[in-house]
Length: 170
Image (cartoon, rainbow, N blue to C red; front, side, top):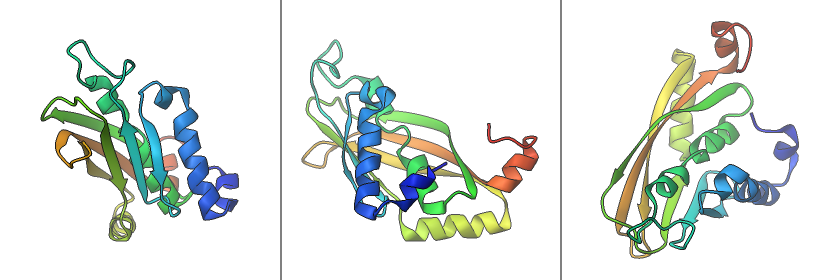
């Protein structure tokens, strides 16, 4: 759930707080990745994963765990911001496909379109829970795809979710 104080901030400050929240959170910080851009409307996030001593594996390429970990949490956060407090959003599943080793800095862009948000709202009006799968490509500065991550997100109407699970958010 998005904190109420975050919703009251001006858009530029909300974006800055989200970027700082990711970058200073110990679990995300440990990935070696850094959020470099958050759009004012929180619909686009860009993450940079540099090749350095903290992110390099035994053969000198980017560590697979770091590639996977930097994709965690972005889509749920964006969906929570777009849908508002009336919904539950959870990461449900994920998979990764390595296409080629990363021997340089890679970038991941997360985008949530207005059409996707409208589609989710329409689908939730018909059925109170759903899953969406999002594909994230990790690319080098030339646009070459090195890794593809698919993340499945569970989304439900909060009232339905509480009734289904005995009244709690957990």
